[in-house]
Image 1 (cartoon, rainbow, N blue to C red):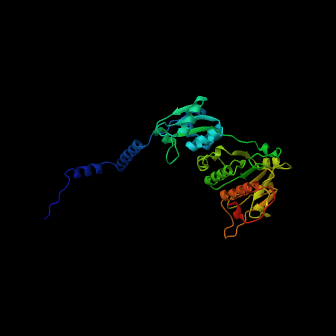
Image 2 (image 1 turned 30 degrees about the vertical axis):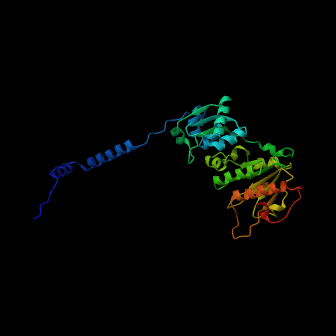
Image 3 (image 1 turned 90 degrees about the vertical axis):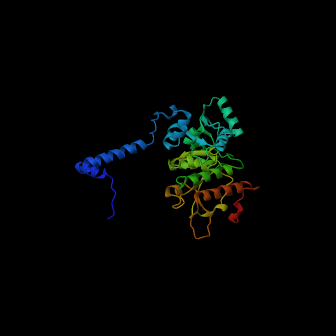
Length: 333
C-alpha cells in the first residue's frame, strides 16, 4: 500500500481552527486584509489653502486644471513652448511661470522666461519629476505658465462699425453648446487662421480655458477675442445697431456664399451638431443661412461648419469689391 506523506502540523492546526469560533476567524482574516489594503494605500494629498492664490506657482498650476479654480481666480494654465510664446507675443498678463530647466531647452522660451522674470513675474524652477506630476502632455515640455484670462465686453457689439479685424469689420462666431472640446479648439484655431474677431460663448456651458480646449487650440486661445454673454444680452446689444446676427441652419433661406460677410460687423451662431439652433437662438438671428449638403447626412461637425463660415468670410474680404457672389462651395476650400 502506497504511503501518504502529511504535514505533521496539519492535524494540530485543523484542531485549533475547529476550536476557534467562525466569527473570530473571519474577523481576524478581514483585519489582516484591511491592514494589507491600508499598507498599500497611496499617500493622501495634502489639503490646499482656501484661497488658490496662496498656493505656490506649481501647486496653483495644478489646481487650475479644475474649472472652479479658473473661474474663481480668472487665471488659466498653459503648457508647452508654443503656448508660452504665443501668450508672450500676444502681450498677455502673466501671473507666474513654472519650468523644469533640465527638460526645457528651447532658446526662445528661455529668453521669454528671462524677460518675464526681469519684469517681476514669479518664476519657480522645479525638478523634471515635479513638473511631470502636474503635466497633462504626453511628453512634458518642462515649461508652463499661469496667464490672466481676458474677456471682451458684449457692449463692443453695439459700437459703431469699423475694421476690428484685418480686411473688414469684425466677424464673431457664437455658440452655446458643443459636443467636444476638440471642436471648440478647432474653431479657435480657425478664428485665428482667418483673422476673425473671436468667439462668443452663449451662457455658462462652454469653457474655452479647459485644458483639452487650450491644447487643441494650439495656442490660438491666446490670440483671439473671447466674449461671454446671454441670449437676452446679445439681443439687446445687437438690436438696431450695426452688428448683424446670422444663424447657420439647415432651414436657412439662403446659401452661405450668397450672404454678404464682408461689409458689416457680423455674429454667426453655430448650433448643436445633432439638434441645430435652439428656438431662442433662431429668434436672435436677422437671417438664417445654410451650408448646402448633397449627401445622405443632414448635418456636419460644428468645427467644420464654423470653418466654412470663417473661410467664406475671408474669401469675400479678399475680393476687390464686396459684392455678393455665387458659385460652388469648393471656392472656399
